[in-house]
Length: 426
Image 1 (cartoon, rainbow, N blue to C red):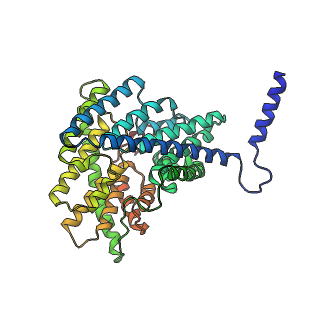
Image 2: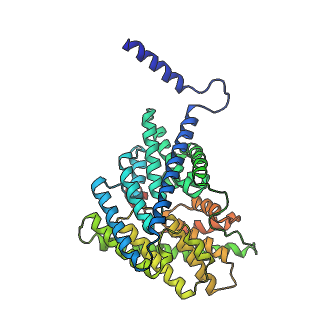
Image 3: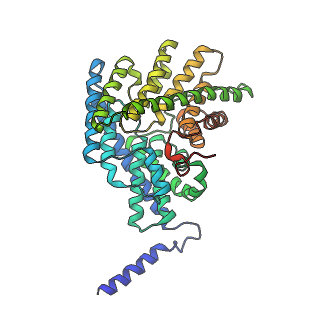
């Protein structure tokens, strides 16, 4: 009986491995696997977002001086979660696993990543939920691939598709999320992963659909910067000029992060003490500059609609960079893409106040694109993401700015695992 059952099982698996015979198109069971992964990714992202909003609403009632002990306590609790449940790692670990660990992302770290990132993001840390979602949905892709006995590039592609599903759910840009999941890995190795683009697109579309249903997401841009009129070929020159300034602040962020990392790593202390200290300092910054609290999803709109003096904007710019750096280096969990967009928006407002004749929207999107591309080295996906998030319909100026930021990035990348085999390229 056992032998007959095994033969039947092998027969059924062989049938599942075959394309759908009645369909003459390139359509087989793998499409449903990518779609199923997208559905799971959308559900995970939606539930995570609902939980994040609920916890944020609870913690947001603490204002004024109370924000200092609240952020310190939340940092301490997040550190305890990491210490006792396990260290979920950061974005460089995801990149390394995709490149050098056959695309396998370990789902055992997901509980620690979910709990610690919820505490960090909801309490007001300057990191967003994109990195936790990418880790959780990417590892879900690995788990699903193992369930279906995938190996090699098929397993790697499913992990990348999972990453794209999580990233897309938050940003609402299936194409941008798909490209980001490939681009963040490494530019010179992007060709190795090109087969993952279709799985990533399919998973992203289904993930976005489910996420939109769960949180009632619309199709309008999150930050409305559509009020722009093309004034001539010089706009491309302005975009590059603003991007050069944005790239300069990208360098400032990288050096600031290295500085605070050297301070936190000077003396080995338990992770929960590092996150406690980080939370205390972040609380002080949030007390004096409340708009620097949180990762910037809503705060960018507040920044754009507010009437801030140039001195206050400079202070917000400097302390937001410091806040992101401390959040990254003190062990808090989250992603820094939206916080970097906040820095770019602040810089664009400063440039406009210094030179009122320039186009405000062009300055903002150029700075946003340049600083993110400089730090993450993702010019293509940054361009698409910004066009989607801001409603800025003129695609080319953002591309010029993002490419400028990319080519002015430091030789040693901020995400260390983007180095080829850990070595500086010549």
